[in-house]
Image 1 (cartoon, helix red, strand yellow):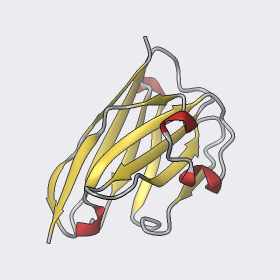
Image 2: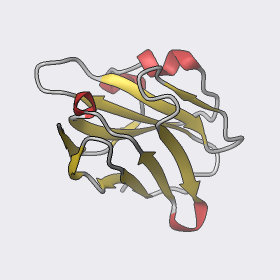
Image 3: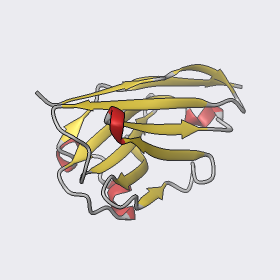
Length: 130
């Protein structure tokens, strides 16, 4: 059974940092596309970052560029989203997603539908206080 489990969310003050984890079970993250998405209350889901576990090609949304970093730990089959200099507007539920193709592009940041990715996690909540 394939599972994506996010963790690491919580409450943090503006300017602080959090590291989200997405641990995958059921397959090895060798050659897949990984995405991080977020959805704030009353807003549509938006893409935060996407990356290829095959070659490390990575894209970030302009709103998080320079503050968020995606990384992989192959030994733990886990993808991380390091978030720094957090702002109140970063408050949202964060989701990781995986697709059965290691080819990524900036266009995938707009691929926010459940059907655009093969697997989704259940989400982790991030709240940034001002």
